[in-house]
Image (cartoon, rainbow, N blue to C red; front, side):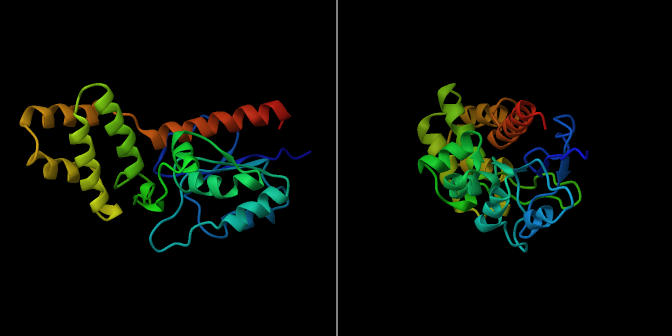
Length: 221
């Protein structure tokens, strides 16, 4: 009997880190048609994880395509990037949303698709920009740890949001912010963002892999 392996679509949220999670197939960031292609395999996957999606000139995976997989009896998990977006839209049909970014969308605290948008190296899938939602969690942590004031954090996010998503990065935002705050606070914030800030997209991606592992183990997949 052929063992049905899970498939996970992942890119900049983990890059090449997702190598030891479970016996599954790692695919590049998802695009339109990728799930349908899995459904016509001789052995469709035991489960599908959607983390990252193709951007700019590629068509994103549609909710209808996700629902078709669920209708085939395949468990579909989503987190971090486009996976979190589709999980909110498809939760009524059985898609499983994982992580803090999913919760932010599900609650309505954020609603813009570009919050999770990033550009990445097509060869390595390493991020070349940073999702705005990651910056939100990082700024909240900076305020809670007294690294930055709430006014500074709010201004950081205003600057980041004003940029087109491929240009969003700490290296782009901080020089603009530096003209508005004192040097010591700017230096402390820069150190925090480089060394200690949470990476919500990465953490949620790992949480999805853990959730899939537990679910498949409980089913004996």
